[in-house]
Length: 227
Image (cartoon, rainbow, N blue to C red):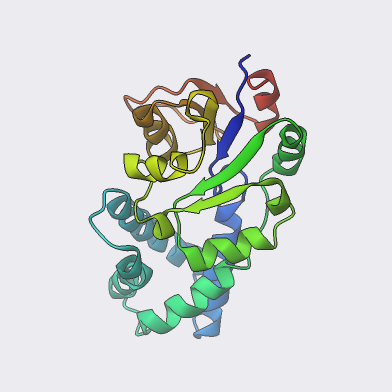
């Protein structure tokens, strides 16, 4: 166990059940625009395209503003849907901003560390989606800061994302980042020189040359790592 004064938590997939919120938003919008069949199949195809666009965003090959609509344009072209990407995106983002479902054990672990540790959220995402979700979430009051990539101008794992955080925080030598994404969270933390904890809830095989300081399958395991 090690003493950490500052805990950076990734949001989606670590504390927040983004998959659930995202599917609910997608399903709502599809039905609103008159598509009521094969929702799960369509969503699977959208997920592939969306993930590809977010990978481009993390590599700074595409801007956040372009990502907002391009993912739907590519998706509609692929599945031959005659919908307007801009209209769909606007409704989708509004609905997504309402999704505040938590991962199992998230509220418990945040309350556990709150008394003796400073904590912040560090997320890749769109500001007008993330801030409304966090503001109305049960655990928002426990975080001193929220850092959103679109607002910072750099996504994780870019080192400038972390430089922005530590331009405000004095805890570089006693910080750990906890996240579910090996590239954005773990590589990002490793590259910046802070300890990392990979939240591997689904027990995936680590097939990348990225080694976290710690690995857990349940959030409660953090109690055995962080003093």
